[in-house]
Image 1 (cartoon, protein in one colour):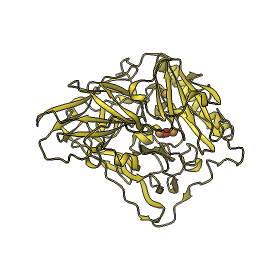
Image 2: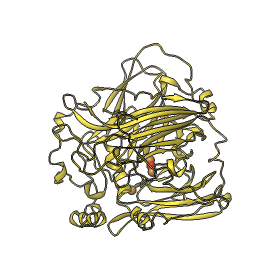
Image 3: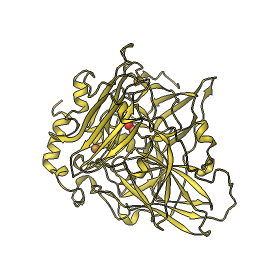
Image 4: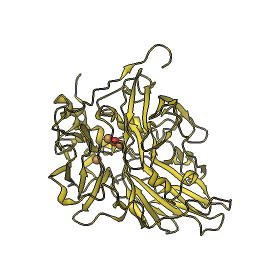
Length: 525
Ligand code: C2O
Ligand code: CU
């Protein structure tokens, strides 16, 4: 090996001085984008039909557990009418199939890496590690970045499903290639229900609609174009919702619940409706809020989930309402990246069940009930650029690797409560910061109360330019090593990721490598 990846990063940063410049700079000079498809060859916004990902069925079930089988494999999709785009999907689907699960029933998901041995244009080996984001999984089933499954290997992931109902998502977390792998399509929904959520008169079933928003960029032949803009992030010129380019969804004259997920890799959004109507946020990353919050707009970083109710009751059939994006600072924007999707109201008959927003949703939400004076420890995490790397407290994942996976940023005790302050001292970029295993309560943002849409339990926090947040969390039942990282996947890969270890004085820690991947047998598995 000649140059280390870190050296290459340093060089590209020096050569382009890219991250030192405002991101709104012209991108026309970028070599990687020379072959970008002409805007005129893209579909007009709001002309494509909307779709929701299909639901996966277990291959078998017993009294406690549902067993699933998923194959990661290439697939050709027609995102741009008339052109084929090669992507990678869970079961060949982009987005991956949706898991519908219930609290109290465990799941085992067999993930088989049937990807090619090399990425067709980028050339790297697509090893994978599947993370169920939002689950308090054991370390060896958490998608630990370096616990990789190579092409031709498989691994069973075990999920406990004991937490409150929530919108989870599963996505690739393979070390140093998470951004490319997720961009290629390796992401999907995993929805968990519980009795409280199921009996609330909020929209359910066909009126409970997951939306994964991702941006893409295409070469003129229809293949995906990937460019990290000198390490600042990937910013596509095309917005997709559930794998469709700027779609239009037909909606009936009632309330809908949308589970919005920013599927990355890097772009942040600030949503609003073009007619100025309010939206009601009912749930955050870790499930139902204590009470609903009505907002005209809100921002959402990569990996955050917000469940939002929009009421179409008062509109005449034929009315069109658009979900738009008033871009937060420091994204690279293009002609139509301010547009997301359109709703078209239809006069069809509908069920009136679950057509309300109760004033109280989950008043006893356990994370939101935490009090600052329960915290036994306060820690600070700085998300900073240092020596050409994205770091947490000056450390990178390469430092973790170099330590033989012993280096940790924090050592909270099992069942203890801690107050973590996360800071972004830069004005040039933002970071969506994610802490694995736990749910947290946002205590303050820049010394002020959290924003209305953040008043629910979360696991990703938007660290805007020069912002700091205080988060309260309980390391309930946990033990072992978990990651903390920026969820701008380009930052995460290069190399803004570290780990903490939850220590139980009575038991040895679980190891993240305790359930390694296994080579595929000849024939089928
Ligand atoms: Cu959504 Cu560490 O990941
Ligand atoms: Cu970041």
